[in-house]
Amino acid sequence: MRVLWFANTPSNYAAGGSAYNGQGWVSALESAVSGKVQLGVAFLTRTSPRDMSLRQVNVCSRKVKWGKDFRHGVTYYPVFNGYDRSRGGRFSLLIHGDARQEADLVAAYRRIVADFRPDVIQIFGSEHSFGLVAAHTEVPVILHVQGLIGPCFRSYLPPGASWRRFILTPPRPGQILQKIYTREKLKRAAAREQRILAGIRYYLGRTEWDHAEVRKIRPDAVFFEGGELLRRPFYEADIEAVGSLPSRLSLVTIISEAPYKGFDLVLRTGRLLREEYRLDFEWKVFGNVEPRFFEELTGISVEEAGITLAGVADASELVDALGHASLYVHPSYIDNSPNAVCEAQLLGAAVVATSVGGVPSLIEDGRTGFLVRSGSPDEIAERVVAMYRNKDLLRSVGRQAREVALRRHDRERIAAELLAVWQQLL
Image 1: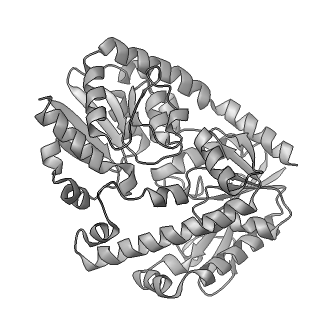
Image 2: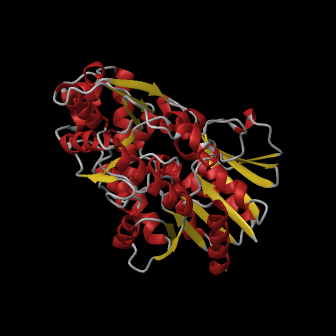
């Protein structure tokens, strides 16, 4: 069987590359299935094909090119998007729109399909234009839902924030232009996502929320349960070594720069823990967070909240941090099935998360984690304090979460079920 992926990351194409923001689990899935099918992986890149060591380069248009390379049994198709490479290019997209970019990218996808001749096409995520290829092929196309741009765009800003305030904080011209571009790009991506979901019938998903959201647009959608592999270090961690609870309250959050991920809630909760509960704690926040906007929005500085910005970390660093934490806190305003929650559970960490999107499909409240109302720093703080004072409950919840996560993310089962889905599509 020949299976072609359109993925948001290079997967295993670039050994030693960044595993930030999802690349780890896609590459893990590739490793699990690549020997069982003939696999092709197409992905977007800002690195020009002339800078790559490729066997073949095909020009699709002046600004979109695609290459072909064969490595460790997999055919890779880097798709160079020259439209989105520079500040000038992004400004041009703001002024002139992205219809030309979309047409050129879809033309490249069609040529890749013709070159690889797949039996099945799998699209990872709906945020890029990959899914538009479904309208140009008779090959069965299945979309693996990872998050939906429409709901994320509607919940992008936290309560009390405006786009004007977000865009103008901090007041640096380069960052202002970037934020204007981000807003417009998200708005257009949300509209494109509607077309993509309307044009694809088959879906892989793992939460009740993603099923419901897709069926709002495509009522006859056919859903298959699609698990996600986690990054290898989380499976291989020595639980006995990293699973001991610290004497001092230690919190971990893994987050991104998007405001809907809830960094404002981290600041508000941190100040509550310090000023109202008088707790001595450590709270490490991993990710590419720019705090200025959130500090101005809340009137709380990172220092006042007792937060340590730990930056982007690799999987091994996160295993160590989560394994030695009292709790993992996930404060998002919207999410589908955040792997950060799943990775924390796999390590046996107790999780406190906002009850939004698909998160309730991952956590049974009081048994495998704790759910709190969205946007409520008081509830987060109350739950953190109550859990910290009940070490037996912390251990019990962490243990049960790990048992569920081991089944949910079992590598052999996920690979076998995915192969069965592809066979079913044929």
